[in-house]
Image (cartoon, rainbow, N blue to C red; front, top):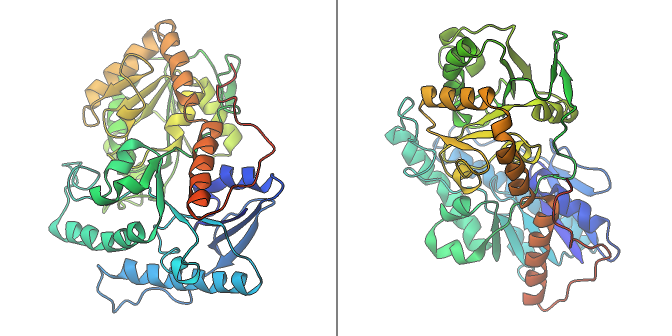
Length: 421
């Protein structure tokens, strides 16, 4: 089988499916990504770069669509080159959010196209307008509705879709839901696991060990969408009422979603100005190597994960796989995974006192949380790489069958989906 993967930031969510099929005899994996894509060892990656950016003269609502057209054109040029060299994919799996797959069907109309359906914008019932402190505007809602023109085209063009959670699937328009399967791409649960002997040395030289009252928070960037403002507002009471608690925060100062503060360089500085805290007990590590990140999760006594109703972060599942006690916001899709009092706790996203209450309860009764931490690990195993690969393989096999082809046999088994203890 020839598998073509298209992702602006390849490998992104396609890392494990690329690794799996590239290791199998009888399969060839080819990827297309932007010139800024990380790439991965052993995978043919063809890079592209749009020849210009969207014009400043284009209506602001339409600039993202023009950018998508420019991305789609460049990808088609790469595909035409591959076709001229004799490469014909049997299945195409793509992340369509930036326009890369817009014109794929014009080159290969009879090749099954599977889209990663990560999110569909809504002006109500999802992230937009969720936080009353930062209300949505009419202009913002109009912009979102216009952006959905690209996503409607993507849904119309693809033959199948795949979403990582049931809620993320549900935000897509009802006529297209029958196309979309729910399969999470998976997290490395065999690598992420509890370690009662874990220790972490902070830049200050302070050593933290598993079993100590360590509160953790992780986000790609410290921002509103991941509840950083409400987490910070809960800290003063936690620090006051638990005198030995240490807080470890991982995340950069950029913005992945939403906007920057108007009165500060980033949300970290903005919140430190609003909520001064003891920086000898609150440790901002920024972005860290993966090994350090794993140790942070392993020494955690309580892990706070807050989010707008939006895409689910890998970090929450990775925390659960590491045996963390997750204190998560009672928002979609967190509540799809975390069951209050069974494998973690749910708190009101906006209730900073409630967040502090739950954290203090967890830090003050660590032994009582062991059953929840074990159950969190078991829950995370349902989102393992192996489980994800099984779902992706089944969908690819169905796509091949529908196109009149049979999948080539594979040489490795994915029957053992349970996590090792």
